[in-house]
Image (tube, rainbow, N blue to C red):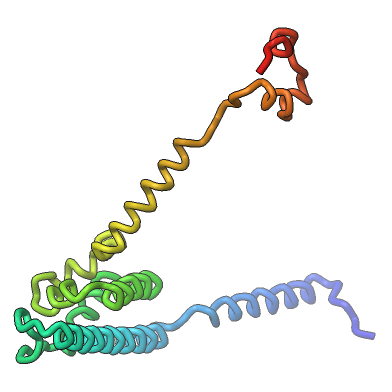
Length: 198
């Protein structure tokens, strides 16, 4: 049978060991600067690669659409874009905005990546041609990144929801609706209300 520490020295030793174990367990979840730098570098590299890949995909989609439409105006055929440079500049700007805050870095990155994948061709061309500055693109809100089509859909849905909210009946129209309601069961119908006929 193990002897429990009943003396002051024994209890102090057990308490000290528990505190040390607790401190060590808390410190193990905190990343060192080197570990944090490695994770930041990994995330930055993946971010730059994904943006570059999305831009390449959108450009090839734009080229296919323009070829199918047979539009020579604004043709992408002879124009080459520095996609790698744009992706690198985007990542650098995103990192300078968020530094080591990976949660906000990833949130902004996902928002922008979805915008690149969902936007129309004109938006992507403006981004590639430099009409939309990379710094302002990083700072755009979700509403700024919606396409014209998505904005019109949102506006239409908001108007329909507002119309439905306004057009709800609040008061009953007939006395029978009052008689069959919960309020009648609770309070009863007055003589004047029961005298009214439909």
